[in-house]
Image (cartoon, rainbow over all chains, first blue to last red; front, side, top):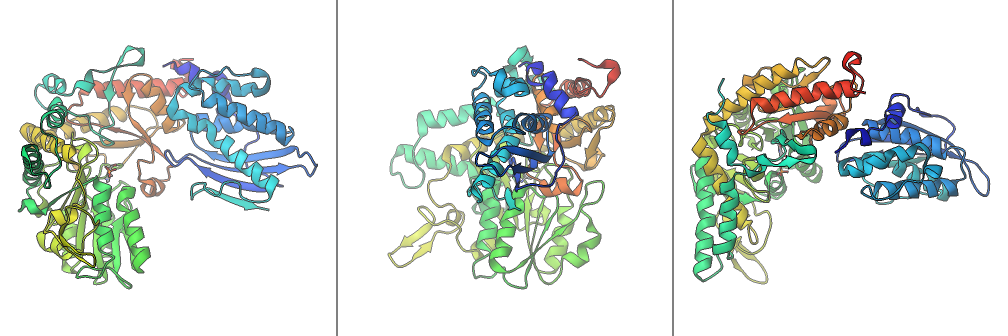
Length: 164
Length: 422
Ligand SMILES: Cc1ncc(COP(=O)(O)O)c(C=O)c1O
């Protein structure tokens, strides 16, 4: 197992200087997601534009967890802020496919940007959930903001939604 | 220093310890508090049973059935001897420790001599495994009783200064762990049991971490009920033990209903089998119980006093080694003679998952997370910790590998600029 494949320099950089960190106003929806097996937590807020085709105006977060989950939150904000929601959801799907591919999926640098650095994480099954935590939180918050209702009726008890 | 003699030979009993992991690293297994490894004799006993004697117990009217029943009941005798139970009938096979604790907490919700109700109190501690917290939350929520708990001192012991306030005539149950799976603390079970009995409370002890490490004497412990799980005592998963004083087990209503636990059944009602079968509904974990019997015989053969001395020696050596890592914070007592072999620690600047992953790439298996003790983590202001836990097969060289691995982890994450690895 190659440690450097997991801890790419980009990941460590994001971990040491996280982008867009902190919880900001204004926001449409706030969610709190927990990884029950390890206790990693993220509180994440989304603000969408009012357009017919909404754009991700802001994503802010407070994350408590390992380098992988913290770096994933940071990379996520860089990738989705400013993108139309529809396009950002495509990126989320690609990232999910990369993480669940056990190292067989080739990452598309064009759309995934710094997130390609997470390709190595897919080979560490115990760490895949760490990388996905902020992305699942973002997806959950975004669909709530789009629908005006909680997206995950079955999400674990500790997870919560709040609408403004 | 109290180490088991011929450790190299003893390690040969555990085939998995020979495993080579990715990158050609030898396995350094420091996660025994999570689950222990299994000696060949346990594996062979289980395979032999499945290959030659497999049949259901109690209800099969043929030779194999008789052999299987005899082996299963012999395992009960071995357990009874291992924990010094006055009677084999007081030994109940469960699925694991969690089921044992749920058995007690559930049956106490029903009317009877020990029933817990409105105005009653159940006392636990802040260092419990979730398995000894949640069943009591369920019981008190269902019955309108009140849940209370002992807090912890800064060095990870029970704060006994509140005992007079906590254990009162309202107390119906006191349930606590013998040895903490996170802090390693060995609790003064007999002393607390004495206080609890003064007010007539039932004393339940979670011996999941004690059974592997300490010579057990359930009567001397003062407890009314003691539970443990088989897979931490070099036995298989899927089997646990609940011991209870005969009067208590006879007074409690059944837990699960089904085959084997009955005396007779009509469409309207049933009468129940005497203990232990009253609490063993359905086909039990037969081969697992037989494997557990082999496991406890193996431990007894080595000697629980010798295993305890080995654990203390390894724990003392590990605490010394950990103290050389800059910034490290060990949670729980620092005196090896006062604790078990699970050592949880915090390495500021590196998250426990990252510590565990770096160690894993060197073949070193530890646990990272909350170790099913979230309240105890919260008490010490940490979200998660890294935990090393040793057992009878752990060597000082493995502790050295851990300490080197931690030094490497620090440098890998840039905490040691001088020796930075990247
Ligand atoms: C102190 C303690 N209690 C209870 C348990 C639960 O054991 P099991 O999961 O086998 O029921 C464990 C182990 O995980 C433990 O360490």
